[in-house]
Structure formats: structure tokens, C-alpha cells
Length: 203
Image (cartoon, rainbow, N blue to C red; front, side):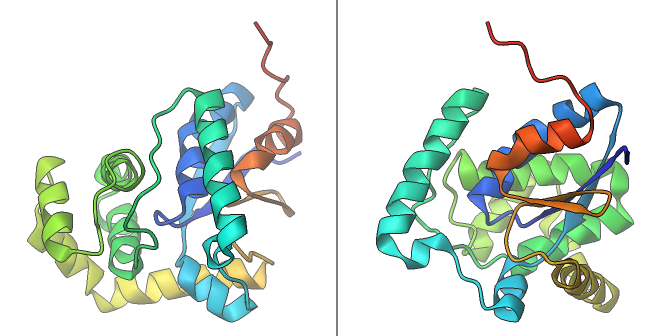
């Protein structure tokens, strides 16, 4: 049984945010390695013919309610971002750029972006708001924007997205334990079982 969980995600996905709040502890309990796999969800949608649930108004309303239920269950802050959907191309290039070029700061960067979007409802479609968010988190916006425009970083995000699609990914978040794919933050129990972690004891 594999002891690695590969987490394909996009920061513009609220379900990815909820999975991100839970997977580190889940993997730590399992003695498993959590591997972060940034991808561009828009690219996945384009390649697979899929679309955001928000494109169907009734489904979108239900999804928002359901995400709130899970946030309450997990005990984590969560707010539907009124600026959704967010164009995450530059953000995800920044994410993978930090992962590859400044790995020691990757976790802090991801924390800042996820919380800006899904706790503080920041409009990260606005470059000025992105810059202010980065400054507040202790990052140099010029440095991050330079990473996002680096040809190698652009290629890395494209390659990661293409790999996700080739492996069957059609949305975010998607987690692989070995060759077994789990889609959605509401599949954490199955991931836990795949990693052979005893279910959490209920109070």
C-alpha cells in the first residue's frame, strides 16, 4: 500500500481549500507523505469538457451550502468569495514557482493565498489586491510576479496540468494514493482508508 498522497489542486477551488486544511494532519497520522501537485483547473476543464458547478445555478447554490457544512464539520473558517470565479493562471504559476524555486517558503505562500481567497474574500482577480496580499504575508510582489512570468515556471504548470488530465483528473481537488484516484474534498474518509489510518474517534 502506497504511503504517498498526491494532491492535485487549484487555489481558486473552494473544495481544494477545504481539502488543504485537512490533508496534512491526515497524512501525518498515516505516516504518509503529502505531495502537492499544483495544476490549472481552467486547463483541466478545457481538456476534459468539464465546468465549475457554479455554471449551473441550482447546483452552485447547493455546493456553497455543502461547503459550509464541511467547513463547520472540520472546524475551519470559510467564506464564499463574492468575486468567484477567480482567474488563477498567475496565482498558480506563483504557487508552482515558489514550490520549485523557494520550497522553504512554499507552505507560507500557499497559506496566504488560500486564506486570502476563502477566509478573507479578497478579490485576487485584481493585481493590486494580489500585491497587497503578498506584502502582508511577507513576500515581494515583484519577485512573485517575475516567477509567474518565467518560461520554465509556465512550462512546469502546463506539464503538471497535462499530467493530471492524462491520469484521469477532471476537477479539483483530486488525490491519488498510488494509482487510485479520489475526487473531491468529501472523499477524505476513502483517502484515510487507502492510507490505512483508523477513522477518527467520535466524541
